[in-house]
Length: 548
Image (cartoon, rainbow, N blue to C red):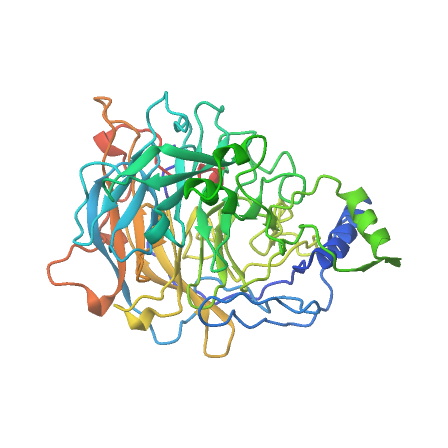
């Protein structure tokens, strides 16, 4: 069992970063870049970054409208932020407890239905509701623990279980929502499923309404990712880890014939049509409950290209020969374990917290509508080479993150081991936090903010050093940010499930309600954490792969 290392730290300044390479969004442009990558790699090398021009694309338009980057854009951050930066406005934050009594909470979501409810995912297979008054309802919204159920959850390993929840953009009218979990009857395969709320009770789901949207085999029981989100374009995005063990043994991150190590993007229209009576269920037999968005980077299309002197169909054929089984669901690749990700509800930009291995955690930024990015794993973790992170001349493949932090205090006093990306604050209650992307960490309990500084460069600043063990996060309907925490064995000595998990709300320090319970700070915590009952056992970490 990992015992997180804690202690007081000093802030340090950002270090300069090295440059990376971006894969454009257009399928024909991605073809050219990927073919070049494969040709060079097959010769025993990898692409090195050159003297590329720094070009930071503008964020998406207000209101979440998608924008496409021009083909000539190359996104090379001039620096990768580390803790020690300074955010504009000197923000001060606190975490206020909303509810406790949760069993291994790992994700937070909210429907756009005006109810003010917060839904909390419990890894063992239940979804709980915290109502608008902050009360945890006694009965679960959905229970997938029954081992005889078609979508029964397998949670035998630390990273298996019910991992993701997303509400359809039109949930208020169609009552549809989606889960992402490891399936017991399918040997732990990851299943994205669609459900409908009960017609009799808005606080109950109808388990019989399940439609399996996507089933994806997993070679090992860790590095599963798990988070799912609807983008501002109405498509469902699925964060998928590299499949487990350590060091990406199946080379999933850079392969295009597997869903492992990817961000996937699908259109759930066929499943919605069946659930809403617009199509017969027979339409899904032998087919898929989703389609491929036409502008996915690897989707079929009619845009001509010129690839190594080949024109039109010849270029298309060349790409097909090198990647005959490339998956059109892929939106981005080169990810290790994208445990949590989100969209800025104002700009449409995507933020990804990708859990690293042994040395670095990274926060990735993708401008709205710009799919096709390669985030570098397993050649890079953060902006550093893998596996030899101290080699300054190692090959560089992929775009760099905008921020990173290490696993050890020797590299930066503000450290951790498993990033939990919380989201960009766009709420109304703490206007001083607007536009900041917040992150926490399972091991260190710190809360950082990432945003552009006054000079336009990315800055990362530690804002809070808590004694919490962050496990998941999400946003309310109104844009407030919530965090879950838990350091609990999966069972008490009696065999009962521990319910030591809690839900916390991020607020400006000057907005803490009178009498509210705030997160304990690190200097108030014991030097060494102990599982419930004082018996050493597995901690409910979202990704033990971070230290494997």
